[in-house]
Amino acid sequence: MGGVQWGSAADERNVYVALSDIKTHPASATTEGAQATYFGPRFLLDGTAGGGLFALSLATGEVVWHTPHPGCGDAPGCSPAQSAAVTAIPGVVFSGGVDGHLRAYAAADGAIIWDADTKRAYDTVNGVVGQGGSIDGPGAVVVAGMLYVNSGYVFIGSAPGNVLLAFSVDGK
Image 1 (cartoon, rainbow, N blue to C red):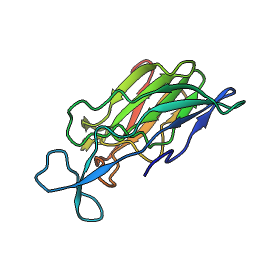
Image 2: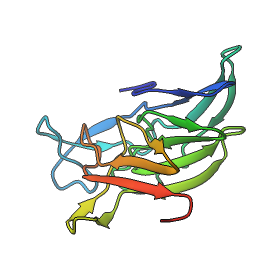
Image 3: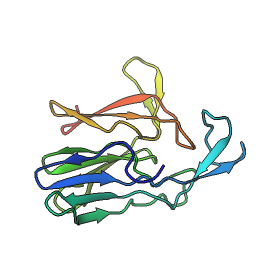
C-alpha cells in the first residue's frame, strides 16, 4: 500500500502526485483509534509513516517541490498517508488523506492554502446524520465552481464514513 495509489493530476508544467506509504499494525478491539476491517481483525494506522505531495517537472522529471504532510500529532489511529487521487485546477492542487483532511496546495510552491477536516459528524440535506472519515480512492471533483469529495473509506485501519461533501468559494 505504498507509493502513488489512485492517481495523479497535471497542468502545463508539472505532474502532482501524493504519497501513500501507509503502514498499519494489528490491534485489539480495545486499542484507541483502531478500526475494524473487512478482513475481521482490527488495525491501527501508523501516525509517522507516509504522506506528502510532490510536484514533478513534466519536462525533466525532477522534483519541483515537495510538501510533507503536516503530521498527525498524537491523534490515535491517524495516518499521514495521502492515497486518494489528486485533483488540479489552475493554480491549485487538491489532495485528500487517510486522516480525513482535504487540503488545497498552491501549484506554484506547494504551500497549503486551505485545509478542511472532514472526519466529523454532519447534518445532511436528507436529515440523516452523516459521518466523515478517511479520504481514499477517488479524489475531489470540481464542477461549476463547486468542489465535491467523498469522506469515509474503510480498508485496513482507515476511518469509515458516508458523506458526499460540497464546498464553494463563497460558502453557499
